[in-house]
Length: 328
Ligand code: UDP
Image 1 (tube, rainbow, N blue to C red):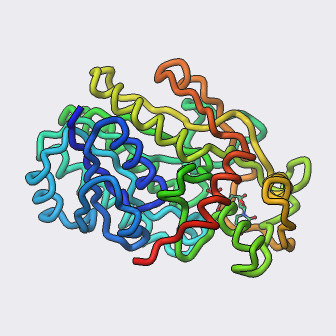
Image 2 (image 1 turned 45 degrees about the vertical axis):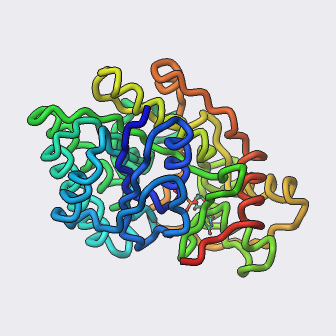
Image 3 (image 1 turned 30 degrees about the vertical axis):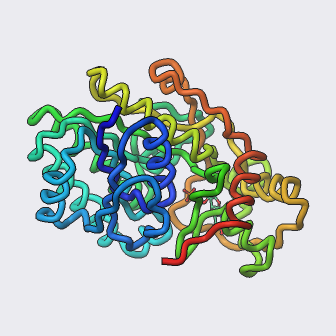
């Protein structure tokens, strides 16, 4: 296609996989990232421009230089625990940052916007499979900040004609099967990489956050999606906007949930290694169960998650874990 896409957070876990998928689909992904939680080594598939979401002058410069036809906005702080402790940082970075980006996007005349939202916008809903019409009642500042950005997008559509595809992610896991990019956070807080670190002794035993939830084994249930399936949906979302189909919200989940204990058991099976773990207290801000259907994404976008089995996610994460890490 030769089109240029501005990818904020392109140096992060999901953004770097999106850049690879975009490049493979014939786009030029331009990464815009402040490297606070991203890695320059992860930018392998297109140009890199360092900058902060709140730096409007820098954003204007990058829009002028590359003239992107669309924005994919991944850049955000995304840890529930941190959001509970430092809500101000989450509201400022995520909401003020996104607002600045959205204003710069509209000012540049770029009207197609793909946004990374989250199932954390839904909050606690007893034993239901969530769909896009489930009320959004976030339990933490992370989810609340993402819900606010969705509202900003709606207002900018009404006032300025900005069209958006909003993806509400469930839990993302796995890595590029070729291990060119993968999941690497510092500090790491996510279940799968922490578990793999515990397996090979890179860090202490995994702490299971609570075994007194109202679930069959007492641990929290999440719906895990392979990062490559997730970014495939973004390419379909971009095509959707290019075809003028209008703004739309899509959940990205698989419809099946795994408890923390089930993820541990599957990891043992896939890696053939014990997973050192101990039981700890609940983590503040965690919902009991977050599982989505994927009916809308499948029917309307034609999305078909093909790699989102727990075995494959762990196997790909394990391959990346053993081969790859970023230095800079
Ligand atoms: N979890 C855990 N121990 C850890 C990290 C996570 O028990 O060290 C649990 C967490 O409570 C949640 C699930 O694993 O139920 C996934 O957490 P993660 O932080 O990976 O993603 P989140 O659900 O917060 O997006």
